[in-house]
Image 1: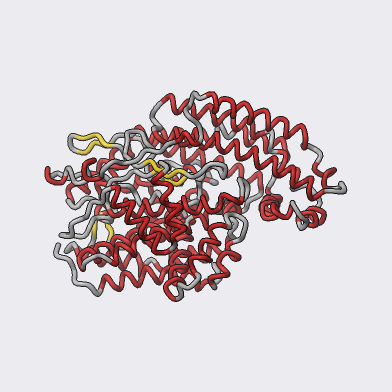
Image 2: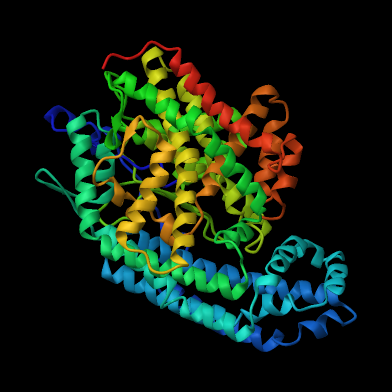
Length: 618
């Protein structure tokens, strides 16, 4: 989860400089990618790439233009099932190749050799997959009644959920040649701009006193115990982003226009409708969630930051103090071994099966943990393909939030392992549900840590958790609101950097409230957030997932009997069921406006508990 940023120790006091040293953290693992391929120049990778190209062409030669004939045949169900099965195997192979290239590249996005390898792989995979594009387009031109009837019969019934998902795209698909053009042009279009953003962000350096830092450690300075360090980090970020703002504004304008063109051709009426479709969630459900969070701003973020300012002896906090640790509460540094044991113990207390899956990530080197120059920022869990296994990337620095991030990404990993048996077509989960296991794993770990904390640590942990939840719910909905404003305004013409800054400041002021002073420089902070570039409107999935998990956890607290089994069954479903089907066994319904109040109420309850504690001395 990108919003919970990895941390790195930094302070002006010499005694603080070693607080997160390699000695304190212990040996940090680097992932072993040989389960995918031995190396970039391995014969296995080259052979699989050639096989993928050949398989795609052979598949097109066998099936293109013939699906209607197959559906009309005497054995339509088994013949179509065989066609989809072959398609799925090719998709798995293409996914394996691209996953390996992407993971290698994320290890050092500034390395020109890796960048070329990734770019070349992306081009060849795009060329190969263009030969497969006909299949889903042709499938959507088949007679509805005949395909529905065939999907209910043996063999093809396995793929019925995938067919149903493909059919949802039918109203928005274009002529085959146009679809092929969109796909092939993506290499020199959206994908190229994404890569420019990644490489620009990775190469930026931020001057803090006599140090030049990358983005991750600089962002971390705003969580330092010393206010002068927090301010120095914020000012360094503002200075460097401002110097590069023309580039980021150009990237943003270009990608927003690219999306507008695609949406217009496909017939999407709202700027976020394509995301809702891919998330398999109704627009009214998202609108209800957004309205509920907007309405909750005063009793969540506004209320909490007013309390935090009081703790610091102020009426308002500067923006660089928003994530500052509580005064006079020492922050524990967790070694990698402690982090591993903490997360696995929390998982095991809920479900030994869940813990056993997570343990494999440590034992089999599926995790890359150290901070390295050029390494992708933030954290992620990459599912790769069902024929392999997921990989997790974190930038581990030993702080409590790093432990939470590890728990979060391992939740994704467990989810991906459990969903893998559904196959390459149905293992992927819509984004609105993809955050379920990650946030739940984070909550389990938080509760485990909280149970053993003393009064001061409990306050600090509750405050940290509230801040994380505000970052996940309030902040991400503010991000979504910013994106809506930006994409709507872009339809009227290109936006200047200053106009984008103004849109950003308007939503930030509204969401954070009067106790946070947004000083000069903060107007540029939109520029480093990768979700705006890579996945427009992705961000509301975090809020959806957090509120969903809070509701699930409330059910768990009331009745634990049989909950773990139902929960793991939900994760194992992957992308085979709609959110309404998955939540029904827990008595939850995201279409009910009251559903969102359950999750928001849990955040508010933590704030109320904090208000009842003695204030720490500033």
